Amino acid sequence: MSRASRKVEHLRYALETDPAGSNGFDDIRFVHHALPASSYPALSLHTAIGELAMSSPIFLNAMTGGAPETETVNRDLAVAARERGLAMAVGSQTAALRDPAMRRTFTVVRRVNPDGIVFANVGANVTVEEARAAVEMLEADALQLHLNPLQELIMPEGDRDFRRVEERVAAIVASVPVPVIVKEVGFGLSGDVVRRLARLGVTAVDVGGRGGTNFAAVENRRRAVALRGFDRWGLTTAESLLEAMHALEGRSVAVIASGGIRHGVDVAKALALGADAVGVAGRFLRVWRDGGVPALLAEIDAFHEELKVAMAALGAGTVAALRRAALVVSGATYHWCVLRGIDVTAYARRS
Image (cartoon, rainbow, N blue to C red; front, side, top):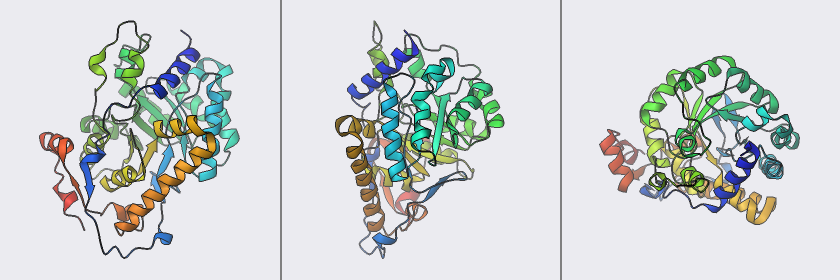
């Protein structure tokens, strides 16, 4: 099967497949603040990933590209990113690196949004030259390197050898002229992996937790014999975010939360747990499918309004102040943290 055909199947099955269970954020509850002393009109959503300043912590995370049918998707997503001032990541550019005819399915993003923040995206097993080419293709402001070993192993034509991935990540970090973000695609990053990535010098990690697009289920639909035992594999987004914050204590690596983000309160919880930014993909893609750019713009506005209401209700005028809001971790997420040696009591006692 050609890469273009595979991209079309991935996009279709991603829209048709149910999310991989809970993202874990229902186990997180804010301690309500009845005297917030806040001003909704004065709230600021500004944040940063390393030195990359962003007007909103919400961005359109990697979705698609690499097949003729995906050019329209990326064009419309870029329009929405431009109109709402959001950063945007493209899907894996490997297809365009192999076939120049597919470049336009990615470069449309920069054509439509010439002044916006755009993230290039390739797998972490590419060469330094390919990573640099992906950045140059989009005049990108940052580079996402995605880790997807489980998806590759289930994918009928996927990679089977991951022995040099860390070596390649280190070489790319040292060679590309933009910040490097390493992300999972829906199975989460453990604390140990986050520590190893920090030692490699990455600017940021995107935990890419379970709860959103289920790439195990997507690839199982493409197999002759499905491996259904992996359909609920991985760390939830909340678990992975807590693992990352515990692993990075005292380190200057930015953290991005993604994986099944449903609304602005999920965004607020992720930021309060310590994330610097929050990526949304599947939710925005489904809204675009059902209502086009107008519906997507309205959904982004709803995300922002819900986030700002949460911030105002908690007395947090900035994203940094939201990290001081008290919250309680309970349920399966709490038990995960106890067994993993992650102390979450400090979150509940903040003021």
